[in-house]
Amino acid sequence: MHGAWLDALEEARLAGERLADSTNGAAAAEAFYRQGELRRLRGELDGAEEAYREARRLGFEPQPGLALLRLAQGNGGAAVAAIRRALAETTQPLKRAVLLPAEVEIALATGDPPAAREACDELEQISALYESELLQAIVAHARGSLELAEGDPAQALTALRDAWRRWQELGAPYLGARTRVALALACRALGDEDAATSELEAARATFAELGAPVDLARDGSVAGPADGPPLGRT
Image 1 (cartoon, rainbow, N blue to C red):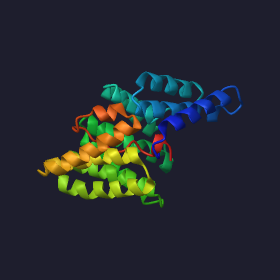
Image 2: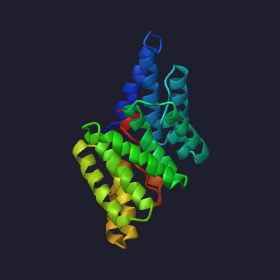
Image 3: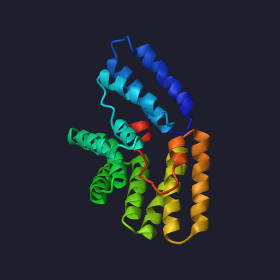
Image 4: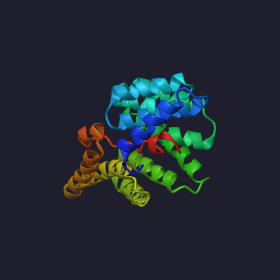
């Protein structure tokens, strides 16, 4: 969450190795899932695929990471099918809160704002049940991204500024940078190119520092909601 991705990746790798031959298969599986999440964020898509596959082999459902990986690979149809299947199988609110931000992102990326709105509305309802700054930040980003996609950049700015403030307080540089990309798009839509350029440059500097090439390569035309709870788990 705080951006120490290489350290986190090493810890997840060691955990996977140490637990692989133990009786705690669930923990070993989650260790591989976390490796997949980190590799996906770092643009190591083949490595992420392998880690998710190992997590699934050990009995861990690799969602929403695998759906987001399919989106990053340009396979929007597979991403939609995967996240919706995972949601159809999940009833517990906090577990759905892990999946719903990805549903918003994938729906917006594949041109389905109504599905994104439905997911965003449910995410807000779940957030209202829990006192979680993390969930509130995710909701604010999702709502701002949705309003931006629906053509209301002024309203989007309010939600996105709230999300940015919360990410700052939580010390989450990657999620904050993704919010700044969305802020840049909202500013651009309102004609403030100076503000848009500033936000985008700040976001790209953070992506470069973290080692997030997929985000760094984006031209600012896409700004989906944050992936959900950091590394896909509450």
